[in-house]
Length: 141
Image (cartoon, rainbow, N blue to C red; front, side, top):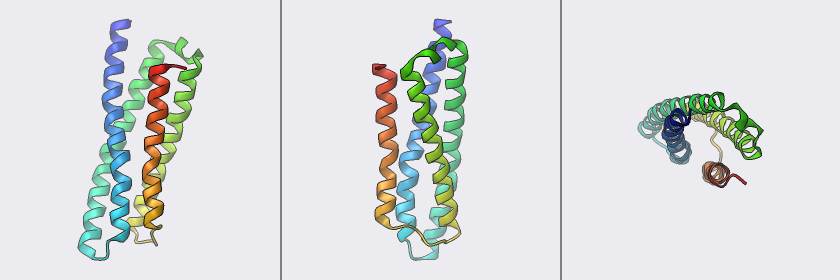
């Protein structure tokens, strides 16, 4: 069981990295998209956002699947407070991911964008999740 858990954990980390790469970059595209004035730029951002969102969603789904497989492999881990806290933060990250989708659709539909400052603050949220999740997973307080 220990060997299989290491393989599950390795692939879980790979897809978490994929997911976070998208979570860090997609909101940055929103900043540029919101201030774009010409149709060519807006169309380019629509394509970039759509493609990145697909890759990021794939990373999220596979990361969650590997995480679930680890829990099924060692269900007693659910008794640990740090893991329950981590899962709560992952649920928050899924909500953030869904909000990214909503913002992407709003920008695509040319709905009035939020301010550039708002998008810049929104862009920092995944970093807070990352720090908290990594601390929980590594330090296990």
